[in-house]
Length: 336
Image 1 (cartoon, rainbow, N blue to C red):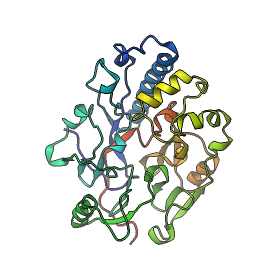
Image 2: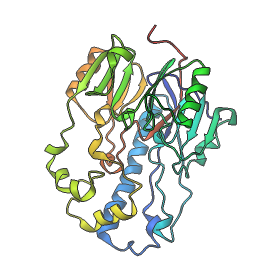
Image 3: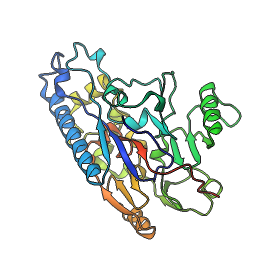
Image 4: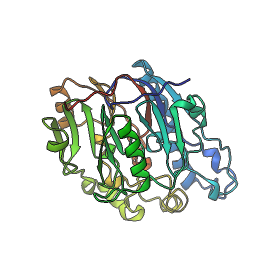
């Protein structure tokens, strides 16, 4: 059985779930399958996404991490209405808090059984609700402290779901800090190790919540300066981008109509903060950033670059496409 434990995002990673892509054969029985303007770029995305997952798996295995994959139980679809998003990003659907894996979401989690069946029931909490916001994309774990950004949270009002889980975790000894920025925590800041954070501007009051910690603030992501993306932004609502296909109107129309649930809002994403720690001294990044790497050097952290080629389509970085299932460490108090 897969062991489950996670108290801090920077504890040594030992077991990790990696996402899965789709197969172009899914579309074989649809009227679009012979349309090369649509299927050729989608085939490239399918093949290269899987290649990148395999590359990430090798990287993690070399670092001593046991990896797991789960495959969609879909072969060919008779209608595009039956299409569902592959589990590219297990991070957004699950949370490991303490010694339990939580699946509390209204999202479609089909295609996960290959992993879930290997987890002991006592370590598994599944509750399907029409809600979002309970995953380690929104919950940052720092030992005894959980920093939870939930879109429904208001200072003087908690939804029933928030209240239930907040009280549950507080009864287990966690301190739960609530906020409502309205977007994923792992797309706004990264707790690299005790005392070290990489963040966007104006995210939260670090002086209050992380007193004395060294925070590197990144400048605004310059999507507006990226001419090819600017060319397609209005057509796709800033949600996705396949470099080189900015003028492929047939593909754009197809994705906007039929793959609407597959894409996110990449215009709002800064991949420089979406990172996966292997331990307190090693972290996997999506790309090179001099400011970030200088910050790492100052704190004796070694960066490893992993290029997820179609992150602009999926709106997912390396933290999104993984779900840490077991990290060494305990419920430590990092704030004294």
